[in-house]
Image (cartoon, rainbow, N blue to C red; front, top):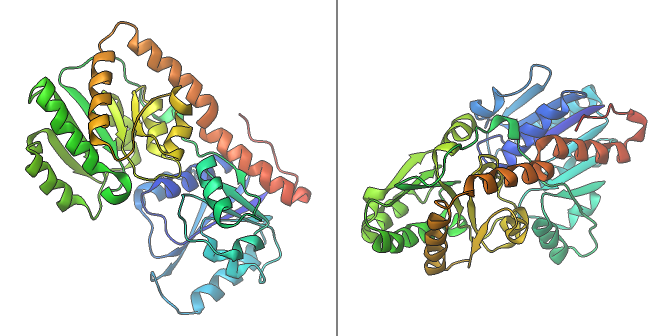
Length: 359
């Protein structure tokens, strides 16, 4: 089967990571192209591609209104003649009347900018129940399917020992506190240190973003700047190698369609603590695979942190975490995600006779 994935850019983020991972996995049995329209490709993602996976960059300056790039894309699609086009932003629907192959859209987050053009896609897929519910709340006539995000569990190095002193917390995401809630974690850290002492707990923030200066200043104001590190953006390989050095992954998001880093934390054998909003709660299955706190409540976040610090030092805690890795892998392995998309492509383009991906 010939499959083309379309995206405007390929930077570091959950949607981009998922796109690259499923394309690499699908390339085991299919002809795969990833077309990046804009001049926006992060080398750490592109270089991770399998040799059989073809990458095409059209080098459009972001925001350009030059019609040449659209024409270039159309001509390229006519030349490749794929069996299916998988778009990762709704705005690619402008191609619908110009190509004659099925088009699939993945909606990657809640509150995504969408319009009634959604109905022109042959299939709309959502990465979680939370995203599907958000789409349906705005477009009740849409019939989206859920294809959960996944990661390569084989690539994540597992934690071996538990109950460390000091207790090390990691938070991995873009530094955008109004969405990701890093400010709540800083305020909660102050409350935990007041209870356990100044050298008891530390937090590392991995990721870059516009909130960096605000969060640094907040850490100073809360008197926790000596217990917080802002490590900046990191490659996925660095993160997958580093997670096992931590005692807890926290994701205090204010809204989140899924939360790929939560799955990564579970894959590393870490306890995960998330805000009780739809996407992350779906990942932890309401508490089966992790812990939660009341969204926007730094006091409750601190209380749950204290609880988990104590739990991590109990006998058998590591065995509990390893069991959760096995359960999560059965739900969120990237091979399952890739296969479910191939099944959807096959439903739309049955004549392509795809080769079945292995589980």
